Length: 312
Image 1 (cartoon, rainbow, N blue to C red):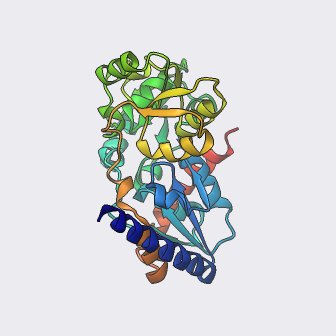
Image 2: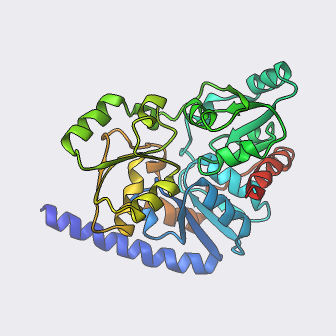
């Protein structure tokens, strides 16, 4: 019975993929998928990447339609950088709790208290927050972005864990907002210690969105892309992974001869996982749901994103 169900599911997916190819051609569409998406989404994407790479792809594409398989703020960033494109997201419920932890009124008050500070906003934030920002960053370029600014004081929003990590790499004073990623913040020292005891030969690779005491245990600390590159090039054959479990798809693809053990079963972002292949096909079929950003918000937010993309 189980084998029959799996066969039926495989046939449905084949049909969906065929339909997707046809719709992509008809709509002149490109599919961008974050590394945290389900395997079935990453398999059919034109580009897989972290927030930074996908922002670059959205800004540069010639396609008329961008289907962003990620969470809502990522679709907003694509729309801001490519205002004349149609931007779709398979499920508009794909939000980001961390992005919701910072609000415009609170940020404006903080800016008034620190008038000489520059605002650096992690890309995991809403368009409204980006519009209040001097420059955006991702986990892959956060330190470079801060070092590029001619200010001694930085207001950092919204991720306190990433902010703590960045603070270790700059002499600038940082005023750090108290937000965090629900998924990465679930990883504890106890989880890592248990895994290290079980797999003593494994290297522990960890994302800086995790708690500072967990990050301090890492053999390697870096963004999603940096973790992927490190694991691919490392001579080690076994890794304990401290980031969202969707990265397992690319890790296994890059290094089929290596073993990847996620540090806890809780490293799953439920918001990223609401998208699936069926919803992806439907959104291209119906051209809904679309991402809209008010012009006055988009114009201000675009400046902060474009400044980020210019940092080398």
